[in-house]
Amino acid sequence: MFPEFPVSRRVFLALGASAVVAACSSSEESATDSVANSDSTPNTTPDGTTGNGASTTTTAPAPSTTTPAAPYSQPGWLTAENALAGTDAWRIDIDLVPTKRASMPGIIEGFADTTSARPGQTVSLYVATAAPTWHIEAYRMGFYGGTLGRLIWQSDELEQPWQFEEPSLDRETRMHVSNWTPSMSFTIDDSWPPGSYLLKLVSSEGGAHYVPLTVRRDECSASLVVVSAVTTWQAYNPWGGRSLYENFGDGSRFDRSKVVSFDRPYALAYSWGSADFLTHELPLIALIEELGIDTAYATDIDLHTSGLGENDELDAVFANRTALLTTGHDEYYSRGMRICLERARDAGINLAFFGANAVYRHVRLEPNEDGMPYRQMANYRTMDDDPMSEVDPMEATVQWRNAPLNAPESELIGVQYFAAGITANYRVVNPGNWVFEGTDVRNGQSFRKLVSIEADGLGPPSREPETLEVLASGPVTYKGAVYNHAMTYYSHASGAGVIATGTIAWINALDAEEWADEETTEFVRTSTTNILRAFAAGPAGVAHPSTGNASRYRSSVKPVE
Image: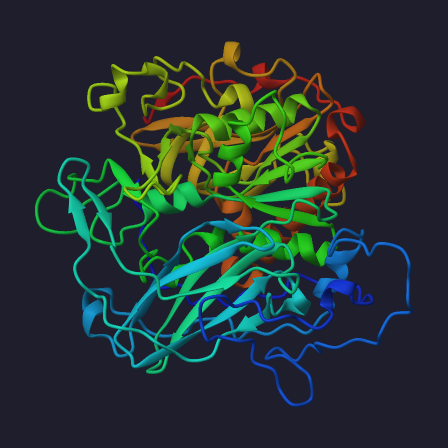
């Protein structure tokens, strides 16, 4: 289902007490110039501070003959990071009229040539603007005392030749590509901590646009890994006139794309280019960082490349962690992505699905016409439509639960998708479970509208874990029938624990101001904290073995009377 794309003017409320102030790690020493192939340099004031007010100099350490530790490799680095001065200057608060995009003063849009970058990697940006000049402000998103962002780097003003020509359209696949030329490049150095970033493009005439970027550091000290759902973002991205769901130009609205490109911006109307990050990811990241749990960051593309690795070994960013966390809407999964999650679970690494509709559609990640890998995503939906069906049927882009894959998501997650565009109450049926400790929740207690946007329920009993334990279950009316929502948890033989909230609204509800229901936010916040701490401590299935009870809550779909 294609969602509405209201302009994001969210002002996230601080989610609780500020993180404990700790001494800054050695990674906060004077930053080096991280820009390559451009005239951009970090803005530094005469008193030795960067644009966010954080000092770029520290007291010189005593001479040492030992090899210094790699940046961010020491436990506690995340608490130290969040003790630094934050800012809310990352926000974009400009009224947008989507139908007048081309005539907006100072309009600016852009995208990066990668979804995640490692230390030493050069990132190229492709930018278009009608303004004379523009610059970049790079914000690391976290807690930072409730401001939720810290300015890491800012470029000088840059000139940009006009490149607002119409995007190309592949007639066969209906794929839109920007065909812009690179505008500038910069290099990730040790002044960029691991994390989720918003690169804020600011034009000299007042326009602004986000470019999401994940900084991946395999060597960082971390128990958890947050995985950004970039494949799903791109599926819903309407930039150019089409998404995998709809045609917004001339012709039938069902004349959708069959392949979409990462070589285009996220649309301005898609939360100013941040896609689902602000609503479906940032509230969770803010809570994790407020709690001070050392965390690594990756994207779905990193899942994919890890799953394609040999010898059943996990990529370094996922190995030696205690839990992988997927976010609110993580629908589009390649084979490599799913294999990575399965390998992690089978190795005793906990999995948390803080949303719904995850691992639902099977996709292929392909190179673009220049040979850059993973820059196109194919999703033809049916065997008859997909040219790969005759070449390699197991790579056909059908739903995971359908033939020839026959691998329902419930085998991995515990639940499976059943409804979109719904609103229902979340009803607790297992209040004594460890997930709800400290909530004082009662059996049968409901939380209004917490089952929203999209929802999961129980699947076929033969295709779910035997130890599946239902924590919440309640009726949902959808297309003239009554279904049952379910939140579940199960312990795997490897010791891993796997939890699924079964509703996309779970992470949204962590944003107290946006959700505007204090009781629900407190319940979701406490339960999520319990999950994060248990999953960070080690194999949750060992500490909290599940008790199978799914048969008690399984019900058939009933027509509305």
